[in-house]
Length: 361
Image 1 (cartoon, one colour):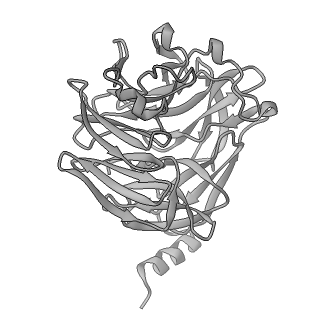
Image 2: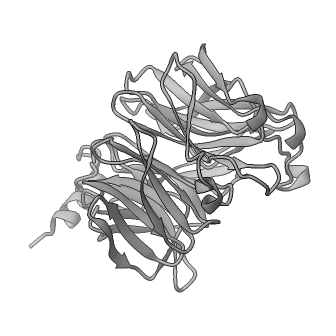
Image 3: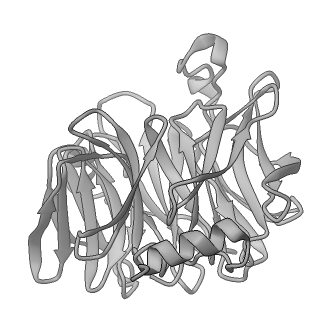
């Protein structure tokens, strides 16, 4: 008897089948890159219970992925600064397309699709001009590059599509780099991180900066609540004295609000926010720190520290029913909720930086 997978493969080969959906890939809740014990790298589809729904090998170490909203396709980005990305069919394992950044550009490891999945937006570095740009790619034309627009800042690391489907929020980290200098940070004394809201055509809608005393707190990663509240994680580039918070929130039209400023709470994070996520019910906002070996979750309304978890090399973080799921470079997967901390699994995988939650998961 022909299996469903065999049937789909035959249909795809004949060109008669519709594009495979995430259900065909095992209905994962998250995507994560990781390294198996044999040294190979793969993109994994994970369920909220920690089970692996699919594994597809990739050519090298990944950073984050952009998940297509409808098709079982994911764009995997090389570790920054990277000049290539690949589009993976998560059912067949085939490479659908390969993306190369234009001359004078490199990717930052993140990207986001338009709501209908017809366009892909990629934060990039225009390194000769020390400027951030957002690349625009036509998915329907085989991921052909259409152009780019200014990110209105330096070092755009992450981007998300706001719930209105018409606005991008960009995390401009503020750090100038150039491939000729490796990963050296070239402008720390004068860096200016920002949150920027742009139309899908690149029109500036709103720009938000931190207090000048925190201009060395690089805004790096983003998550969104369904009502448009933005959570952002930061990475401190200053001295190791009194460390500032690495977690913040912003709602359009208001000032940013930082969480974790009191009582030495920020010191546990060692000045480094790795990933950020709202809980499944939206009541909590959490940040991970691989350098601090810590996850902290805060009450969104009161700003109080609600939960904390010590976990070696923790970085990946995603919403789960009743709380969060966190992943570690040691292979651990852990659930953090109001009921406490419960191990989910310890896979033979060194999980990479991010858990990318699928739309509607």
